[in-house]
Image (cartoon, rainbow, N blue to C red; front, side):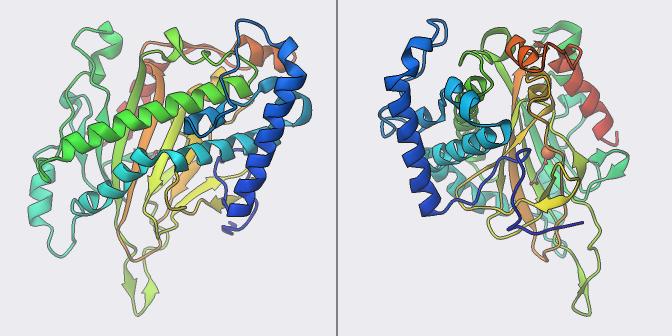
Length: 379
Ligand SMILES: O=C(O)CCC(=O)C(=O)O
Ligand SMILES: [Fe+2]
């Protein structure tokens, strides 16, 4: 197993070390794009796929995400444009100052939910009052070891929330996931803060998906309408106990905080504790590499549904968590998903790019989610 944070990170893993120099470099590339689009490419544009205005990035951070796909197809191989896209994503997220403010104000609150192993009773009691059960639509608190990945208990505790589904909204398909979110009663404004955070994450994710749609060669609305116009979401507040030590040596080094898996939907925004490197992703060479936290940024994972939609042009990111630090680690993972009842199939443009070979069968997102959720927990 290799764990070198400085190692070049593969295209399956969308995060970048971002120095000021790289930043400027990207802005220059961006300007070149704008120039070239305005000069030559305009004539190639089909009226059904208008380019968003990208000439005034200061107006909205997200405008930078709208990469002109024709240019990218021409000059960059997949690897390069995914990397570029990731930089735009990170730039956009950096500039989302209201997002950042919520992220920063969230941390101390989340820390207070931590179970101190020596003094667990009060927090444990509070958390158990919002216990996750199938009857609650799998929403609520789960103890350490209750979440299972491929048959092995994960060394984390979590509060899971899902977009609320109205009763009967999706018939039998929606039934297992119906229920109301169970928010901790303490701190008092936790629910409001989290709902604000969810709405910002939804907004950012939708914009990133527009950029991805363009990068894949489709229209920016590819992930709207019946595919994602009423996007489902999942949010997990996760706590990983620190590794215990004996005689100065780590004794729980091999405890897996979260076993190797891919996420289920389109895109995940992973908001990790700033000082602990525990998340690992597997690159195409089959090596596990660390995804260290970069303050003020998310790690973005590609999910199973985006793999299908892109006909495999994008791989879903295999990742896992091992917290070797002695400190409790907090992570807030926001999962941006297709519509709950979306019939997901490879986009035509992606099949076309794969020499007409359709690599995946249709999947109904809700069915995929329910099958995963129902095998994920000890009930
Ligand atoms: O804790 C992390 O960094 C990632 C969590 C994760 O992969 C998940 O909840 O799906
Ligand atoms: Fe994950």
